[in-house]
Image: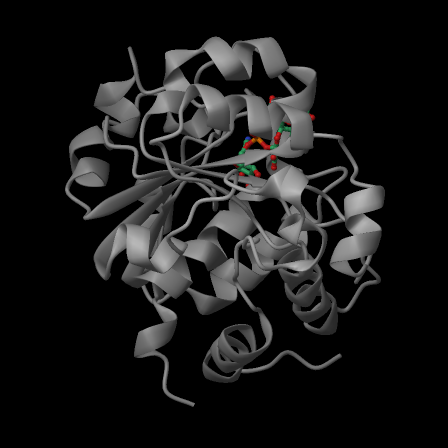
Length: 276
Ligand code: NCC
């Protein structure tokens, strides 16, 4: 597989990765069991048109970065899973516009998810590792984690908060492009929340700054900026094709290598500014 130029690769991402949320009219979700649970407004309508956006990885290298004010200067900020802001504002900022969570968190950490105020800010999006290119019906019968009940419970408790389910087709459309642009064979596991969040923001924003997805000079084996846990796999990947994701993002970077080194910052164009 020959590597595409950054311009061509952006066009592939724009044209082949369909970022959509499950709607009340989709497949098994159009049943009476699901009535009133899914948000009525589309994600696009909910967020409006966004200018400069920030995606904040959960990497340990955010610690002592002092990136908080810079991150908060963006029109919208996307964070992942249980990544906190309270007590970490100096390094990661305090604004949360969208929080992307995986279905494991919603299911395995259900009690915390339902009760922790961390999740009550901004728009929530949950995604689940669906079988490779499965139809929605097939995925619905066999999700990786059975998060649907927890989703409904959360919706009952927080009916005003927008909470979307990512259409699982997207992850494999993105994985195909990762595979086509890598020399090695990639395990067929879905991209990380990080990579999914980056592409979601590229569909919503004019420009996307991604922080500490490509590690800066602060690179560390500490997994998260909010925990003491050490594991190299957090940065390099084990289950998720993280290394391939990072190579792709590096290839697309429109900022400088200096910005990566000092701020862990990569700048990507929004798809509406990509001309094919
Ligand atoms: O760790 P996690 O990811 O929540 O991190 C969010 C995203 O930040 C990027 N990251 C993180 C740490 C690091 N050192 N370098 C990074 O680049 C990655 O892009 C990552 O996706 C996930 O992707 O959903 C993941 O979720 C956790 C865990 O399920 C949640 O934190 C909820 O507790 C997974 N960890 C485990 O299952 C133990 C992780 O593998 C992937």
